[in-house]
Every structure is written in C-alpha cells, then in structure tokens.
Amino acid sequence: MKKDYKSREFIFRGILMHLKEFSLNEINDYYEKIFQSYSVSEKDKALIKYVTLTTIRYRGFIEKTINLYLKKPLNKKMLEAKSGIMVGITQILFSRIPIYASVNTTVDLFRGNKKKWRPLVNALLRKVSRDKEKLIKKSLNKSINIPNWLIKTWQKQYGNQKTTKIIDSIFVEPAIDIFVKKNLVAAKENFDADLILNDTIRTKKPGNLKEISGYKEGEWWIQNIAAQLPVKILGNIKNKKIIELCAAPGGKTAQMLHEGAFVTSIEISKKRTHLLKKNIERLKLASNHRIVCADARKWKPNKKSEMTIVDVPCSSTGTLRKNPDVMWQKSIKTITEMNKLQKELLNTAINLTITNGTIIYCNCSLQFEEGEEIINYFLIKRKVKLVKINIKEIKGYPANIINKGLIRTLPYMYNDFTGMDGFFIARLKKI
Image 1: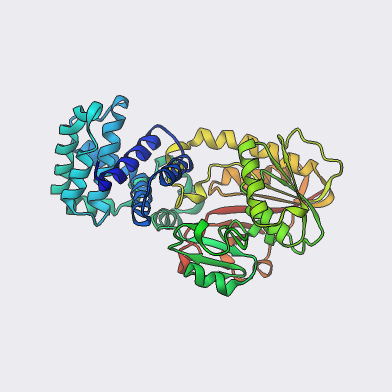
Image 2: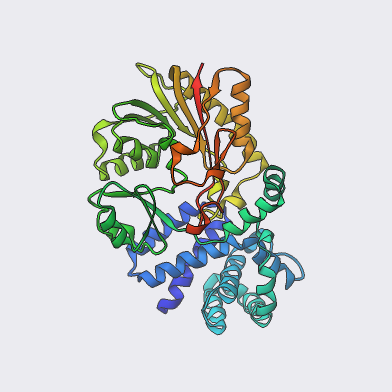
C-alpha cells in the first residue's frame, strides 16, 4: 500500500471509531500506538490529526451534504461507507489536497470486504467535487454543526450575540498553553511560543511534546490558562494542606505542589490515578503529594482540610475547540445525570473541609446547570457562603470573566491570543 494511502487508512479508522461513539481521547490513543508501530513522519501525523479534528468539527455540515446527494440516508450498517465519505469530503472542502487525490485516495480505501461501497463513495465524492465552491459557502454557517439543544441552551443563558461568538470560537484551532516552572525565556524559545500570562507560554505548533527540551526534566506541563484559575484564587498556599477531589490528570495538582502546598489527591479511576502519579513524578513534585484511589464520596480522611478543591466531571462543553466529539456524545440527559453527581461531590468537599475553610468548585462546562445552579442550590441550603472573586486576584485576565463574584470564562475571551477554554469557578466558605 502506498504511504499516502496508509495515512488515509488511519484517519478512516479514527472516524469510524468516532461514529461508533469512541471519544477523541481514545482515538488519539489509537493514533499514538500507530505512530509508535509505524514510521510516521511529523507531516503525516499533522495531516492525520487535522483531518480527524476537522471532520468531527464539521460533522453536522458533512452529514447534511451526504444526505443532499442521496435518495435515502445511510443506515447504521453503513458506517464504513459513511466514514470514508466523511474523510473524503473533509479533504475536498477543507484541505489543500488536490481534488483528484482526495477522491482517489478515499476510493482506494474500499478494498476487500469494503469493495461493495466503492461505487457509492466514488459517485458521491465526485458530485461534492463538482459543487465544491457552492458547498464551501454553505459551510460558513457554523451553527449547522452544533446540536439544537446546545444552541438553545446557550441562547437562553448568554443571548444570541455571545452564542454566535461561542460557536465561531469552536472552529478556531486551539493553541497549547504551557506552564513553566522556571527558565521561562528558554522554554519560550524551545516552543517558539508567546508569553501570555504569569508563568505560561502559548504555542500553535508544538510538534512532539515529549521530544522538546525540558519534558523529561519535568520543567513544564500543559495547562490551559482558564484551568489555572481555581488554584490562583486560593491565594498563598505555601505549607497549606489541601484535599483535591477528581484530581487527574494533574494540572492543578502540579500548580499547588509547585507553590509549596501539601496535597492529598483523590481519584476514583485506577487508570487516571496511574496517569496522575506518572505526571507528578515526571515533574519532580511528588515529595509533598499523596494519592488515594477511591470514590471520594466514601473516603474518610484522618483530619478535615483547611482547603478543598473539586473539579467535577462535567459535559466538557467548554473544551469543544479541542474536543468537538463532545457535541455528539452529550445530551440534555447527560447534563441531568451530571448535575446529580456534581451535587454529591460538592457536598463531599464541604464535609471534608473544616468550618470557615475554603472550597473551590469548578468544571469545564458552559452550562449553567453544572455551574451557577449548583452553587445557588448550596447557598439556599446555607451550607456555605460565597466568597466573591475580584479582578485584583487574577491579574492579567480579562475583567469580564467575573460575574457576581463567580468566574465564567468563555472560549472567545482573551481572543487576541486565540481564546481560552470555557470554565466555571466558585469560591465558597463552609458555614
């Protein structure tokens, strides 16, 4: 098989996994195994990741395009045909790959047991090629790719103008934020990055992170500037003892340890516990760190904590720029289920904290049901009171991320530097 075709084969399998409801993280894990098994160039790695992400981001539009040229929609038994067609359409409309190559490399995927789909794929892609300019104009309406339930929720919460900005921001290629322990200037040069805030640099072309200077030495870690805020509003935490719930993969853990805190991290997943341990050890921050693999709701400490931080599992709608698959795997039902778990975890955090102690509740969701409504629920119950966050505590961040003493970042904010993740943060004091 030609090298060029092999990269398409990998993408085809990745999109097929997406259609079978595997997460983007699982697809990327598959790609990493492929990259280790085959001699894949950096250029081909970039192509594979770009076509995969773009296909998922534009899935709504691509599906409408497919249906435009078919007498009846593809059924669930035709996922292989659908995967190939989607990959082909992405290359034709959203890449610089010549049309003939986009069509031929896709059609060539359909060999052996898949050969029966070859005529269908070939005919449909040639129709798309013929109408390329017209279809590109249609694709400019980004809202086609967002499920209606999400758009309606955002319009109710944020209004039409902000909703449009949120949708547009999803289609901006996200940069990578790097928190640097020291030697900021050297790291900036190594990454060809911009200094954006405090100890953080931002890069658009990171390459293979594990091969960049300082990785093995534990001199830096990846952490979006929005995800750094929960620890920043704790203030001076040197020598403080902090309990952290739902700790993996460990960005906030590393922040707290780097600032001299003693951290006990609770994580329910064995796999994620292993990842957390590995990450903190690489960063050489393990000396003041204790990890417990347990359900936080059932775990009992020897002593309650002055500070507790809980980054709850959520719908992750604030990370759609880098995780567009979330749109296709979450629903209103998911939000309802998450809401129940989030209340249980915040209640646990309160119970693990001393009276007058500080609790930080946060997540990477844009949905009020997972943020403001959770906090209002506990304020009404009078278990906690809100300790309002002020702009002086988060110097360098845009003032409009604070609303009524809460932090609510949106993806289009900090737009001069290509935005930030959507995040919700509340600081509470136990009554």
